[in-house]
Length: 221
Image (tube, rainbow, N blue to C red):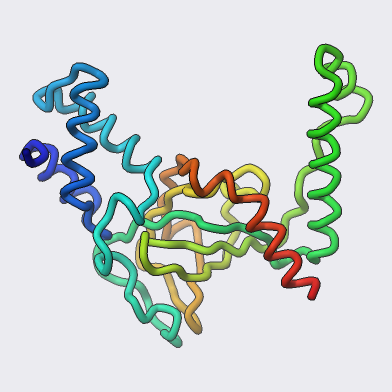
């Protein structure tokens, strides 16, 4: 059975690039109706659950291929991504404005603090006071890998986007691109040309530290 017509219409109006896979949407609606005992006639609640499930999904699973980013985007020299806004998700995040050596040291300090917290247990609050807050990564210029589920492209933080933060922003985080600039196959991100949707995808997030380490090792040679 197909997804409810009112939900399909709403989804196509809200998120048409990339297009949702009708099979995924059908299964999602069936799961919501069963799990929450909701009817699609209760549009506000039902559509809210659809949005939540969509933003938590991997776009590779929930959307149709070749309906989002241009397939040749990595070869575009200079252009603006026009047309309907395009939803993408973060697949990797690092900072090219800070040396890989500095980032590696901060990462190790954060890992050491996490290991210590796990050992301390009941005295965790006292230990945190003695050691101070968990160190944050220094901020320079973020580099992201963005994907529409099929096509992956590099993006850089051309102007500061404070809501995105290395060590905090999870993988699978959704961003809506609106008339972003492309230079030599790289998307230039600015606050006025994006809309942050948030959320995370568990399958991607569990790989974040491994992906981050790999990118640092490449930079270190």
